Image 1 (cartoon, each protein chain N blue to C red):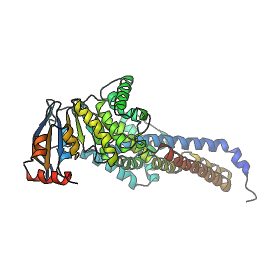
Image 2: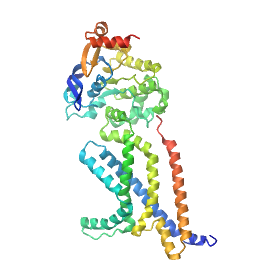
Image 3: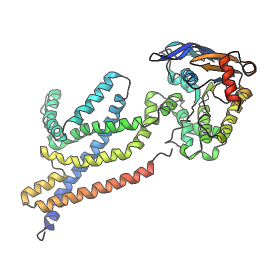
Image 4: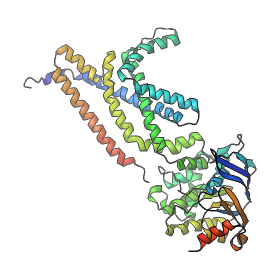
Length: 226
Length: 242
């Protein structure tokens, strides 16, 4: 431990910060996009139209049954091909960009299950009351059901986001440079694994722990008074 | 105003409504009573199509609710409904509860809606609670807000589905008082309730249901004076003699 070299961390902080920024960007994109798509999937799954139910159920089951690393790899390879088929041009989108898409699509499956239980947690009488006021299906969902579902599920949604934040490190599989990937690359170059991996672990811990405290705080703030 | 003709409804093979026929005329107050499980709540929910039915017809103000072409949101906006469990929107303040449908469904401006909402809130004696959330109010207060919320839409008639059944005894009267006042002002009302005092006071007709069928449909005096069916007699004897 005596030769723990802080200068390695300081010298490379710029590169690490760049990686961290990328991790945060992917996390936020996948969270917002994932919750949006997930909510639509949840509504489809709970609808009374069988093809929509099947589609949503299939989507969720497929993505929840495949390891994330594999999905990251698959989309990295498949996405350019699909884009090429559509546009007829070569579209090298790169590892960093493909991860935005992959995580959004993958996390949507998990967020959809959370939103589904959130929607089911809203009493049926609320739906009846919405309809009775003259709301359409869309208005009833948007104004009455989803705001309550979202509030009920906020802690779980944020907890899932914390997991997502850590899972972004899996982009190392396709060579993208997230926070962990940045540390990994420095380690390979400077051969300082102890300093680098310790730093990464500490930063992950501080951020995730702070976020989970925030979840607790929010939980008491926005809980619906019943 | 409300014409119910030969309505039957099944849950799977179980029949919950059997050939129900009755009507509510303009400014008439009709009380629907009967033992639990008799189908009275189901029947009243059929009126604004919250419950579908398989046979028969219900016409509200000239519009057939079972017609697939009927614009249900538009129809429901004209029919006020008060639920057993109040069903105020818990994530909105009382003012928002009173105004949201006025704004989103009727297209009123926010000022108009708030003005109307607060007037009605004052009428049910709760003006001071405008900024609170439903969870901060007692059951009786919540139900009065729910009535004000329905009235804010300027309904052509009001449906009450056991409005006092979920209330503590000391809160029942504050809700019934509002309903009595409403009835005396000439509001068309269909009320599922066990409050026979309310029925005696303001009802024009009383409908007695049992096992999904309308067993008795009579003017108030007749119903309380000499119910024709034995089942209605038994029911009255049970709920009136404490």
